[in-house]
Length: 78
Image 1: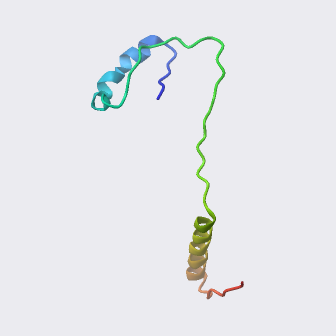
Image 2 (image 1 turned 135 degrees about the vertical axis):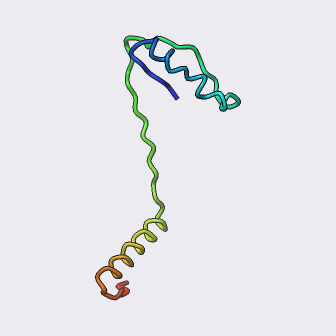
Image 3 (image 1 turned 90 degrees about the horizontal axis):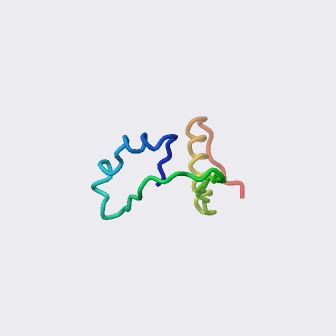
């Protein structure tokens, strides 16, 4: 996790070590560093790809809801 602020004093006031003391076995807190002036911004996006069985199951649930809502019976069109 990275914490960013416009001023170094803002990070000092946050006192992150106090808030994360119970995680001391799992984390390492570094000192406050200055961000270089020529930095490229990066964004990471995690996508959850559904498998074929999961998609079929979701579609079946939607069809069952539609059937219950409209009162129309389900028919197998295979």
